Image (cartoon, rainbow, N blue to C red):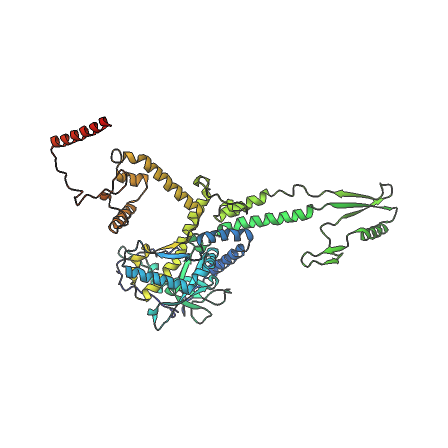
Length: 552
């Protein structure tokens, strides 16, 4: 195999040779497994796969230029990427990561550095839009080969038409797979994974997997590869979310074109001129008809593109009238008018296919009209489509965040902040927090919280009698075990820091702090007093009070 361009990150742990599997690992990236062949060298023929992928990307980009599709794409991108004057569109979230504060601080710093070299805060809209349209995203991670510990120096975008991910099976494994394995012999196929990059986006016949043949082989770890997650299982290729809208868009285009042709041809009124030619011979009659037609016909043509008016008689206009001869004995010269097309203002079919196009793109139909707003009222007024659309955008964000995950992994390992083994354990606990401004989902959550608190107020008198505190927190407030544990720890910490009052120092009925005694311990057991002496004091006090009342 020729030398690859770039770098590779190797796992320091020696994996056990006893862990074998006849089924290769599937990354669901839409990459075929190509088998090396040839006597003098290695040749990988990916012409068919590349051409199909190349044509798909071209089609997706052409679809994005259509006004309806462009509006739907902008709705998706604007929901996924929220630009704010002060906040970044995305930040790394490490609350679930079990690591020291020093490691978390370094991860945040490196993530901020990666965003800076990508210029993500300014180009986030374009980056996400390109990924959404093409269905894939490639970035070259440029490092200093002499000082790899300095980390990534630059991130350069690669056109998906110029690069191809290849998974090539090793020759040694090809022979093993062709043999009949015994009971104790399980094949364990091994693959060489790399990228093939070329400056020319169009390949004439095939692609030779050798450097110096017009293409460059790049190592797997040098490229950040992020896909849409949609894969055609039959043809094993990555699809874009615009794939489902191809048929709907073609139907909409045909309906619009046919409507324009129908209106241009049927809308204007046309006249029929019956010219009396008398007993003239056929040739003379035709000549006379042409003379009359040239005399009275519309001779000027208006050019809508340039705004010019010219005399162009060789072209027949859409408002061309009909000239018919009439022999002697008829009704003489006559002019009649043909009515224009009827029901030209009906757009029900256009609206249907527009809604169908929006449904295929996952965008709510209510967003088609320009005057269709939303009411920030109760959640009952929120359409179900908007909630589904918010979940769809959330899934897109999760998939798009794989790009940050790969870049952050390379950066942390190169700078020796974490090891590859540590990263495999930390990867699932690193989340990415995107700015969110979907009012529909926020309204739904707010109303649910209000409803739960209302139920809690009604059931509070029965806590401790018919319902336990744990039941209330799990069934009424819908708190999970993890949330309960986190909330209890937060409350305990806030009481310790003095943010919240100590429950033992607060009256449970009124919520007011208990009065502090004169140095007396509030938790001490009260001493028993003489009941006779206390009764005597109460009697004397009552006697004095009654005496003063009588005197008054």
